[in-house]
Structure formats: C-alpha cells, structure tokens
Image (cartoon, rainbow, N blue to C red; front, side, top):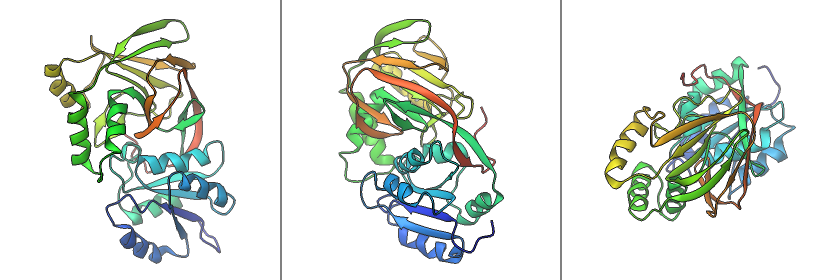
Length: 295
C-alpha cells in the first residue's frame, strides 16, 4: 500500500484496554509512515472522528471493544472505506469472530494485503448493529454491567449471576414475513454473527456474510436449567430444542414489546417499541484476516 502519507487511522478508545493505550501508541510509532491515530474522548466520539476523517484515510482501525467497533463501523457502512479491529475491550465478540488478535504486525500485514470481506449489518430502528442485538436477559445484564466501576470478565460474570436471580421474562409479539408469533421469552436476539464475546456463542450457525440474520428465541428457564444453558453457550453447542428456536430471516422483522431496555452489540441502550429490524447485505468492507470463524 505505497503512499506518501499515512493511509490507516487507528481510533483508540483509551477507556478500553486496561491502561495499555500508551504501550500501543509506542508500537504505532514503528509504523508512522503508514499509520496515524486519534483518541476518542466520549461516547459516540469514534463515530464523529470517522466522519471527520472519511476522505483522509482508506482504512479505519477500531481500537477497543464491541462498542468502539460499532461506532466506527456505523460511519463506514455504504462507503468504500475499510474496517479493521485491534481488540482491547471486554468481550470482543466481533474481533473474535473475524479472527483479529492483539498483534499489530499481523494486523498491518492483513491491511496491506488489501483483501476485504463484504459483511452484513443489521439496522435496528435505524441504528447499526454489526453482530448481536438483544432484549431480555442479556440486555438486562448489559444495563447492570454499565453500573459497575470496572470492566472485564469477572465483573461481567458478577452481573450475569446477579441479574439472573431477579430477572423476569419479557413479553413480545414478533411479526415475521409469513407468520406472527407471541410469548414470553428469556432472551430475544437478532444475531448477525455467532457470539457476544468471551467465546459465548449464542447463534453458532450465524454467518455475518450470508445476507440474513438469525432470530434467536429462548423461552424462560428454571434456575436449575441455567447452568446447563450457560455451559452450552460457552462451548458453542446451543441448538434448536424445546427451549431455543432459531429462525433465519432475510426479510424485515418487527418486534412489539413493552420492554425498552435493549443492547446493541453489547452496549446498553433504550429503544421504543415497535422494533424494526432489517439486514443489509455486504455493505461493510472488513479487512480479511483469513480467520473468520467457520460454522
């Protein structure tokens, strides 16, 4: 990728990565002829940075967790610019799914190869979701997690357990292309790719490049069923059964629910019903590491 100026912009979320921002910046100095960087300073700043710099760089690297990836990707949809990820957040679901590692040399080599993978995104009431959006238990955990001072796996685990013992199912009516279904659910997820992060594969068969999303419906669980569910979740063995239903969707889906606490790519948000979801096929150019998880 010969150029007379840096062609790659790293957008660094200094709140992610457990204080390792300075070390990464020192490493980036080795590539200063190819790479520039900016620090995000507040929520949604990464998205603003990309929009400001869109005509100045060809590749934008999200340095952070899934929330940072979402912000950067949201500004790159329907452009010819490219997304890459240097994972430094908590779950790193998107990065794990696409094979991104904390290896700067390998990342720059992948970018310089010029290979990309056209990737789908979902629009959820107009907002971009690059891997999983949900309502129900996982959304309740996301909202609880934001109240904790620290990030990381163990705080996430604490939220997961604490929320379970106070959680009540969510009621929803779901309008599909050819049918309407209704009921109470433990989780309702819209999965563009397989995992939340930490290896928790909610939709093991989901493929972020196939032009569809998987609607995941989990019926209410008894307390003694939860450990088995969690084991299957973290070992990638969830599948259709009497408690879990997977519905592949290419056409728009509408979800009507009194609940307003959702998560988009793991970030807690509040959305108003009805929820309108549609997939956009291949509208995000993701740098190809050659290691997208096989299904």
